[in-house]
Image 1 (cartoon, rainbow, N blue to C red):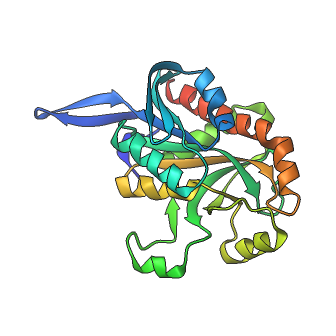
Image 2: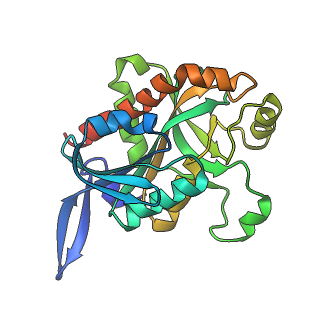
Length: 252
């Protein structure tokens, strides 16, 4: 999709005074909850902390890679604002959204991982397709996706537990069997959450590559509240461990 995200180089090229300069790619990493970014932050050599829009943007390095990390808060607007800020204000060359989600696809179990093939909104009226950007789904970046596959393969505990699929987002925690069924019938997603589509939408508008990585914390059903409480910590750490491995692999 975008040359700067070629997995063979993971560099960005800038034009300066008539010549090209190659720089290491800067990663923007977003999680909605502190639990989703805590492990990443603990591995980060932080050089700056900037409070903006109710969040704190952490700049620094992980495995020698430039990173801007933020806990954006729950919901689509929070995610879109922070993704746009990571790109526009802090110069992120790609955006990766990590965290937890409710499993929707058949055979998807707690602590399994979904890597976005595309993202879309499950609470958006079809009339929105008449207006820019006139699309229901935003495809994830192929190079980031391939790197994520390598990262998952390098983590023994995730053997056979990672899949690619559609992720849908809406401004509600899905904990109702009837709503779950309705979303499945309309969109056939692998999982459902509250931020990924907004991140993909923002990245699309900026022309930047993105990826969403979600570990299942519940089944988006009538028991979701209890299941979520039981699995949130381990699910959040699983997604964080994947992006940490991606950063390490990209630095090799």
